[in-house]
Image (cartoon, rainbow, N blue to C red; front, side, top):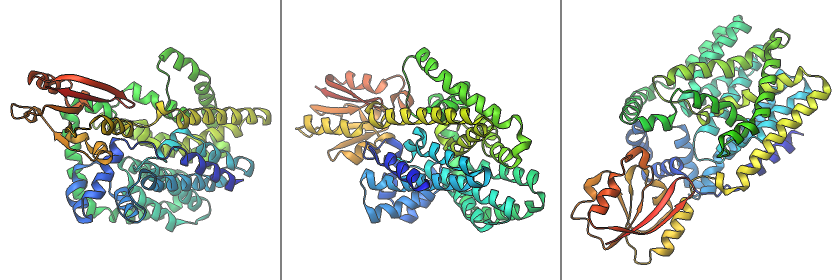
Length: 460
């Protein structure tokens, strides 16, 4: 049965894999294409806020398999499939055989996991590392096996994404409670992995300084990256259930989600109601989902990081808890609960995969229109910080600007194009457009594209 689940997971993750790259993907691709390996680590990475592993993976992968969107997204697809497989291996330890396949099937059809298994970012890698780490740790607690694998996955955790670091103290808590005699071995394993991160610490401190400065400079930026507020907290169970899809009418959206959320709450209650009966499973999943989430919420009051997509590494634990709750039901209700959860996954995943409205920013569509209509090869202006997707798809003349000084009296084109992307963050007062109009330019064409993209033509 597992091979069929993995095949299903692969098929779902290959559908529309060629959709347009969005901003963060294009920035990563631009970094690994423009910098040498040394400059990537010493010049670019201090300005980012991520560990380097996903950059290194894609740096070498792209030079072997090419620079197309499909080729560049394949590592995340592979990490996603490995996560499904590792989740099954863990489920075999926590549950009896009839239930071990349920979490893997849930994750393979999860809309949220499919989405981030199709993205040139670190989230799929981080989820794989944490799932592998929890499998190796649980195996070590139960049978004193796979400690080497635990060290390896801990190292991947530390170099994949900073938020997943919070799983390490949660794991120490788990071992201390369940098998105190093996606490020293796990602690030393983590320490060995941490030693390998010491050379990266100077870069990390630079990244923290840069990140705090960016968050403090713009309240809009803090909201985008994930401040600690009720909305971001409530989005976690919602997005874990249905992925990236949504309904514009909030009342209708709430009505549609009421029964799925009620079922989720009931299964969570069932899972932990008599936690002593399955002590290993209950404490493992509590340590995986609850403890890191609490720590991340607390950190988010200082550094805005509370966004559901950064918590993808908690999604396997979410499905394991639902499965634990299912094991506590009668046989008839077990079947109905699994069927309901799978129906939610298949419907939400299908909506994402086959409805372009929920795909990523349509930079391909924008550049196709731009190429078709810009026969005179007029320049295209865009804020330099967000120009990477346009530079990936468009071969024409691009003017990267960072402030109004670019649009002064020396700016004297008879016509040009503007992509006013990310204005709420970089230009909330629309001063750039006002400056352009003050120079005598008028709009002659405007078209909107998916993902808050707009293409404007100005003539004089």
